[in-house]
Length: 605
Image (cartoon, rainbow, N blue to C red; front, side, top):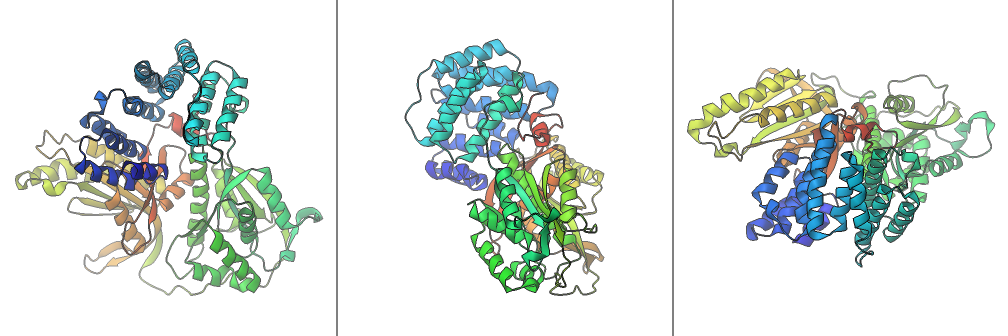
């Protein structure tokens, strides 16, 4: 069972891993490794307070001899430091360093030793940091093990050399680490963040540091055209558009790609990505067959063949709605925003910077949707962009709408939807229900109304709120969670197992009159999906759909953090969906500054 749990954690499926831990602990309640894994799942999913509480309840603070178990307390404090306001960062960093140091003294492990050194450097104590680093380097050579284990040992050696100011030795150790596990980009990202943090604490710029170079996720977009001859290189260059796209991908060291698959530039980008062996995620505003009818088939059979080939080779295909109609430009804009946000989220995971590549005719008139709009959104987020300028000959072929939207009293609206529920309320004794309503539900209702939702509803111990923007919904979720945590359940004689869970989703809903309640309400599959996401969230957490996390990535400035928790089947009738955890962080915290950083890495100054 432990091997299965470890595999799920490595693959990022934290929800599944946590469920397996709890199930296994029912049969093996004294298994410390399963308890450790359960806390790690909570920690990585953003439930830091709950992770700390279960750390104590499981008795892991009493662990001995096992370095990983003993270091968990220090790791929890480290997570708090990275999300804290700047004035609390150094005290928390020192607290984490001292706890790592105590484990290092007891075990002599290089993992805790180098973390003690790094956190001590971040706390401002360079002398103690260098002392720990020297001891790590003197502890012995790299031990035998699997490639990932050897990678981390060599990466720790590189970190220790960096703390001692020996950049050449750090680069040699880093090169050896990368050679051991060359395609483990997740591990490389951890090292990249850690070395950048240490270098920043030492006053070194990111450009001068030995850092792993990772492929850059990118968003692509471009004009639709029927024949390649319709899109001519600006200035009359002789090289082909496909060749210029290849050059741009190479120049910017691109990796995972995110975009649509309309005839023309989109398909040229996708084909170039697949030739490079990189990951392709196709994001469409409508189901595949509807998209083909509208944006590919009108431009010729050859484009259909090439589009279907790309669809067959894509790593993932996201249909952002089940609508059979392209409704104005709203659904197109949603798909574009999700594709851009996914590129930014992937870059954040890899501790690098995303880039946008556009095939664009600068003479095109401004539109509310399309390539130029996508470019403006990207630049508005202060992200790097590269244009492949072209001169377009106007074609008689145009994207067509497969079906026209019929007039209806139910209006389409893009909404950020929030469902919240108090877990464990069924255990409340009948005589304390009035107290529960007054002391728990009422403060939550007041917090909800204070966020000025576009729509609100309630049922029993649950809330349904909707907003126009993702930032408003994220802030509301944070306020609701804070309001619940401020309630003293013990004083109210309520079960201390009560907890709040929240689900978030962004997508098209239908707004119209509820025939039973005789008031405006929201309907549709996307509303149901939002409710299902809430029911899968771990207690004490805020879970968001991939669509919500992606849209938020393009709208926020770093005040919220979204991290993937894995695939989850939220409804037996639907395919699994990729979920993220969301939590609010201090605007001046390390993780918020990393989100805004031009290098995509944490910096202390």
